[in-house]
Image (cartoon, rainbow, N blue to C red; front, side, top):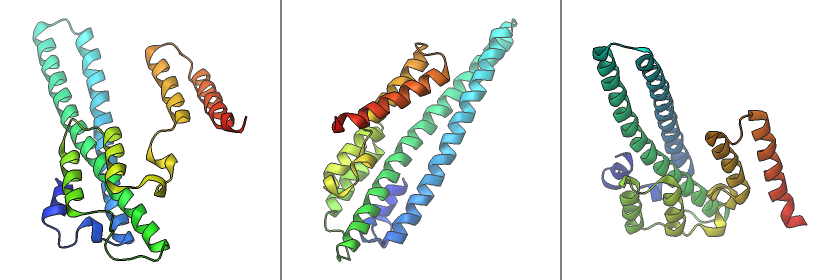
Length: 201
């Protein structure tokens, strides 16, 4: 709810914040997001341990107890994942606004960020609160709303084609098509180098 509180309760809206104020908000959100990630990772490990204990347990009563714990952990994990999705979108928003503020200051403009209206902020708030809108989709909508376009470094806006090749290698490793981490790294490194070299050819 942090984002909606900015819209409804703060004396100063995000669009009026200075670059340093936006950076502070960005760091706070980043810290919160890291804590959520750590909790999700811990739950994933706990679930793995519970599953292994249940696999080795022969008593039905004990297995039922472990199964209940596993289910509770999964529910907690899903709730934290929802919070993480929201925090990720909030952090993207503040980061983009900070970049716009920096660009405006470099261009000699100050005051409110003209590109961000109150209606825009309300639209962003609804997108942030929606579970159906994941961070990747939100990023595209955010850039559309803020009309960032070329003002933001394209490399930071979305995962490039070269970046997608790295994600493809990870997917192959997940599926067991690539078993050796060194082999996976070499393929990812080679693919990224090829993608970067392609435009020059």
